[in-house]
Length: 124
Image 1 (cartoon, helix red, strand yellow):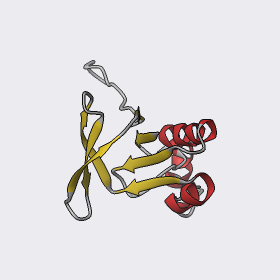
Image 2 (tube, helix red, strand yellow):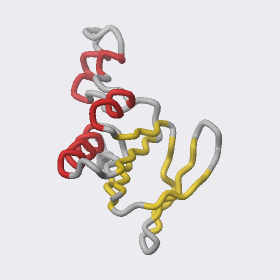
Image 3 (tube, one colour):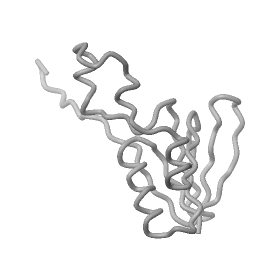
C-alpha cells in the first residue's frame, strides 16, 4: 500500500504518523511545497513578539526525524500540481529543479491547511 500526503504541517504529519501506526508496511510519502515542516503555528505570536529568538525553535521535527522514527519520506520544496483521481496519481513539481513527475498512490490524504475568509464588510 502506498499513501501520499499533501502538506507537511501539523495535520499532514499527524495523519502520516497515524497511518504508520495503522500500517507498518505501507510506503508513506509527504509532499510539502515550503521549506519547513511541522512548525508550531501557535508559537508564531511569541516569535513575532521577540519571546522566541529563532523561528527554528518552532520547528520541532525535521524530514530526517520522520524518516528515522516513522519511516516516512518527506519531500520539501515539492508542489502537487494536479490530482488524477481516476488513475490514482499526483503530478508533482520539484521546486528546486523544476522537474515534474507523476507518483501513483493507493490512498491520498490532503492536508494543505486553510485560509481565513474575510467578509467584504467595510471596516474589517
